Image 1: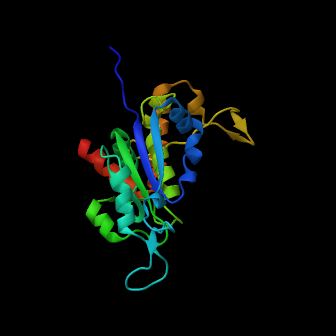
Image 2 (image 1 turned 90 degrees about the vertical axis):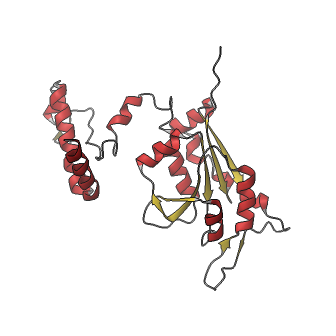
Image 3 (image 1 turned 45 degrees about the horizontal axis):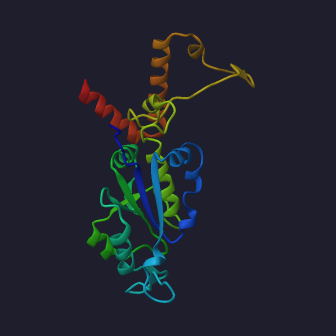
Length: 239
């Protein structure tokens, strides 16, 4: 008996569907898309406007600069194309930060629907009515949600089964153990007077593992004290 599996599916609602797949059409994600390991549908929000000008935005109540995307238009779009098998996420600087754990959660679901905002954002009533989950790339503002959607999808797609040629490499990446990743080196062994650390040339796998852990801990402690604090707390809880 042949077991048929449904590929992980991403639905993106955007005013600029031509931005997709963009970089996701290349390298690992692009090859996986070509193989059918995942599916991508970029939907033009303007297709759900009802006037002859395909209007999707209007002036904000209360005044102020900029325009706001209309709840009625977006609701029609979500009602028609959102995949009910997974969450609907609105890319927003107000959202919870995207983390590796969140990417794993989304990659484990059958599908995800992403809403890309523009202008000053979307009518808040849509967020309330649809129970949209807001996710942010970080503490900065983009011109629209498309760039954030591309980054989120890339983080998820590389976690899908069969996408990475060496899936065991995931275990050593930044954030997998609550730490930033250790430094990497390759040939030549000496370059511009800088030598590769001797331990990496020793063939002693236990010593190499200890060196890499020490480096990851040192880098995390220096660069990301927030991660270091959480790592120490998790380590103490286990011990």
